Image (cartoon, rainbow, N blue to C red; front, side, top):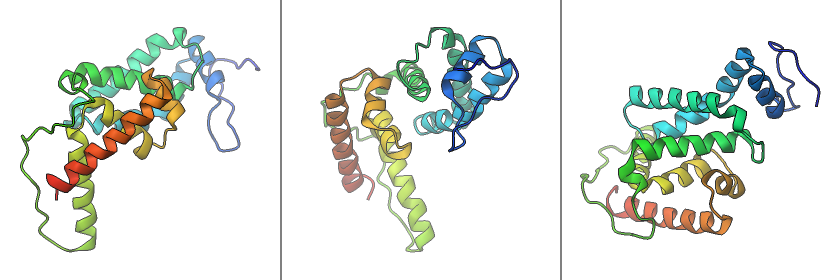
Length: 197
C-alpha cells in the first residue's frame, strides 16, 4: 500500500469508490480532509438506517452526528478485519440500541404483536398514491419490529448488505442472521396482512 500525503485525495477504484484502507490510514494520521471524505461516503447509509428507526428528523440527525463522532474516536482501534461499512453499521446498531432500549430488549423469539397503533385504511386508487401508501405501510410495519429485526431488514433489503456483512456487523453467526431475517420477514408479513392493510 502506498502512503498518501495528508490532504491528498484517496485512490479510487474503477467503480469510483475510495480505497477504504488508505482512507482509514489517512484519518489515523490526523488528515481532517480524509475524515470529511469518510463522512461523505457513509453519511447517506448512516442517516437512512437511523431515520428508519428514529422518526424525529432532528433527533435522527443528532444521532448520525454522534455515530460519526464515535467513528472518529474509534478509528485508531479499527482493525480492518471487516469492511469499514460493516464496522460503521455496527456503531449505528449500538447507537440505536441505546436510543431505543424498548426495541433493543424485545425478544426475537416472541411473535406476539403490540397492538398500540390504529390500522391504516388507504383511501384512493391512484397508482402514485398507492405506492406512497405501500411505502408508508411498510415503514410503519418495520418500525413495529424489534430493533434487531429492523436492522436486518433495513440492512439486507434496503441497503443490500450480504449475510456475511450483517453477521460481522451484528457479531452473530451467519445461520442466526438467516434465521432472524426469516423471522423478521414472517413477522413483517403478518403485520402487513393484519394491521396495515
